[in-house]
Length: 190
Image (cartoon, rainbow, N blue to C red; front, top):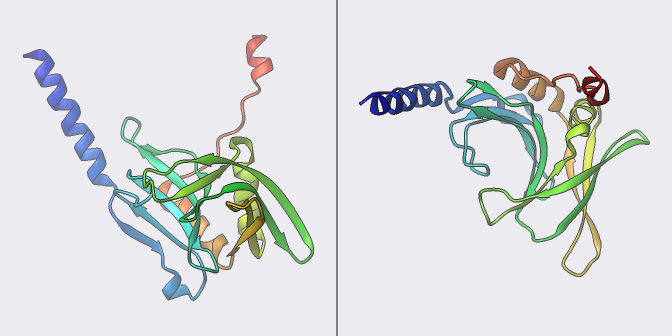
């Protein structure tokens, strides 16, 4: 009987926590006239779980660039955000280059498999997330390079117009932050 009560209590807590995340538009690009949106979602269409995200579509409308944080039912908080490029095409990503006025920063990507198996994606390296989010907020456009099925290097372009406001609103609304990096060698020597 005690196990049943414990299981039911956990389910009620989980359902209540899940209910706290609602589908809500934080920044609407149609209202701002810019390229970026931000929202919370009970069940993100790509990741199939609750999220808080800021995102834009590529210039060709086939790909998404997103800064996304996943809701954790156990902590009742959103995770640190990730930066993903997701597309419908079948190819291998190489990197992301963020450019403005002749300067650029380059970030390496790792392949990921979205829950929606009709899509492919790539995620920026863990240690580069904060730097890439900062660059997205500061620069004008982002290009993700990839190899197509014939091995030719191609690119996907994203406008960053409105990204600073959408990401700032996302971070504020969902309580997002990047945690300081741990100094592992010094922790080992304690």
